[in-house]
Length: 316
Image 1 (cartoon, helix red, strand yellow):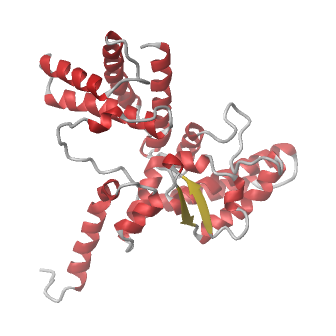
Image 2 (tube, helix red, strand yellow):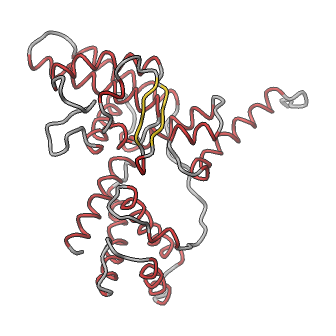
């Protein structure tokens, strides 16, 4: 894999690991698929930055001529499609050449999520850690208190808003100053949306901000600043933090990621009466078809409603 292509694929893998909690086996499968795809592009003197829809069609034609199974061909198309979608969403390409490619229709898998009880355990584990750490004024104790309060703030904000992890870690501090009942979020394509905060999320913000000011200084523009290469907390680091909290809560860390908490936010809202259009706006989906993956939650809610309240519904 060429240098520029290798770096773009590496960035894609960082997102898959941090936002979606992709396992090593999943990443290995993506790597094999994308190595094959980029090798094909090199034979046409193309790269990921300038590949066109015609190149993708030629590649799929080559796969078909090799007699690969339909499932393998579909998986390779899915791999390169997700890569190109990522490059477009991150502004690394001005277009998505895979958008025009028709692929075999496959049932869409349901997103992994957490129960309300599991989310409660996560939040409680984070709060308990904050309670133990927030004592004293020494530099070491301040650092521990700051990190613990930051963790609570991150989890409460994510579960209260369903933000994409990239949106969450890059929030400016001005987004949560003042009354903090609504925050302005800049999402994909620089589209802005307002998202309401729960009381628990507001409380977590209020407790975190004074510690943040002591640690980062008043002039730092980021809500979750960092001293690393990135000016703010990275999504990969937050994914690690979340897995640490999951272990403390007695939950399988392999099943927990920022993306899973975003799905929990969506599923729990629908289960408690929200509608798809409202959820679409909260999640920042450009198309309602993306939000419709959660219709299984609506169907279950309607079934329960009928079984509970319909006069002919009886338990035998």
